[in-house]
Length: 237
Image 1: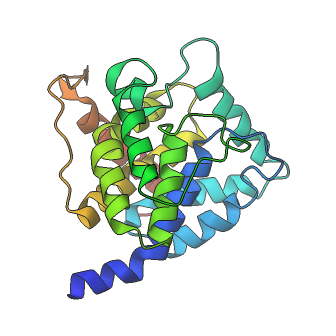
Image 2: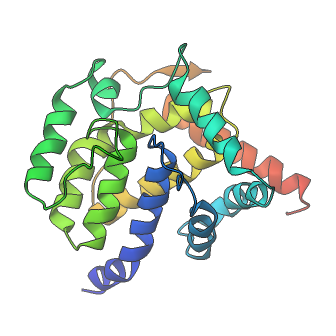
């Protein structure tokens, strides 16, 4: 019962994390795009689930103090996800099966049918299985107390492939601010696995990237290494 009560207290905080991350990974022509990013990040930093992420938030918030800084997020997004060459796939269909409109899209649509939520094509130009849309959908499910649908979406779609997507972002040479974002998102996904009591999937074809380490282990060590370097430069022991 206590665990359930704790999760209930965390509901709005978790929803906010999904909302912020969803907006960062979704494409939009809206003039309001990322207009609340600074507000989101400040609130998220106040309810940290992992103290190691404080430096990641500090970097993002410090950058947002500069005038017109939000444009840098837009430009980096375009380089990572919209470039004509070597852009990072943003749909769970492509991430999982190597082509669009495959099983993950069908799965998301089946989940949507059980809810009152529908994709507004005026604002969402990507398909329902895009990473950004799915994260925003998780935020809405949690806000509406649709816990069963949230768990189904996380377990059947997000959990299976989100680490690969975030890993591709983290490792991309064009990722600077999005490297910090992916570090926060990777840690949050681990936290969500605890909340939903879902195991991290083990992929047989796990890619070896350096010194025979798996992609996920290499990313974990690299993130820790960068955090220690930042703390050392700031005089934190």
